Image 1 (cartoon, helix red, strand yellow):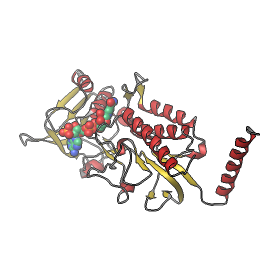
Image 2: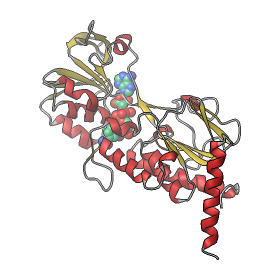
Image 3: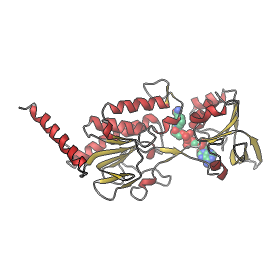
Image 4: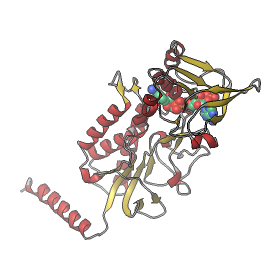
Length: 335
Ligand code: NAP
């Protein structure tokens, strides 16, 4: 008898929930996870293994920022792996624990965190949930120049890995001084005839190993203390107008490609006014991953002002699933 009971109970629960859904009734999720970078996948795997039966809303373009990078050499367990391959592995891993019905490949359009259970809108579909893990990551920043915007896709790019191929034997510039700029310049040097990094200061903030790769690459030149004031060209990029911030000297540098690598902004627009968000747009957290709303957790680049590393994001994701489990247990919403 003892072995039959759990089976019958689980079957009953499954049928009950299915009929409930078909009839358009109210089905409240234990936890919804928004985002599919390392934080989102780690949260989904941990939550599923804690029997939370999570729903993972991955977005239209699953995989986050690592989909736009080339080699990842600092994720433990992988001495060298392409960013998209690492994300595919995470996706496959999550599918071991989540059924297809719990993976939604659409964008969250809005949320209502002023009601409980919380409401998550995916266009005209609304999901309700007792807890929420926000792992919506960050998006590449732009310089904000009018001609930069006009010439996106016509020589201006925010993704070296996506577009480098189109710049075979052409001159390109990379704007920025962090790891992204170093990585983009190194990658572009395999295609372009020459690469010039334009940086607004006289030293890079990138890690020394990435800087060393750039310094030792004969195809990469560096212009220090300089900002891009304009992107020139009618139908496609023909040059950039530069200004030395120390001397004030202005000049035009002919180029056919402009790659912007000046960092990222957290994707928090849909949470503004409902959660505490700091002056740079990051979700404010306390006790690691707790936000200003009970049962709402934030993990990864959406709340991490400091580290911004894939492996750290995965750690935040795991923490958020553990905290969500504790929250649901304390509220007696799960056993
Ligand atoms: P970042 O570290 O914030 O660097 C942004 C760079 O762009 C800085 O050098 C900054 O100059 C410059 N910048 C910012 N706004 C600018 C503007 N308006 N005009 C001109 N320059 C501007 O961003 P990131 O390089 O994207 O890296 C983000 C995080 O991801 C970092 O933690 C990084 O370590 C990580 N990451 C890791 C890897 C890897 O390990 N393989 C690869 C890529 C990124 P200042 O230095 O003067 O502020």
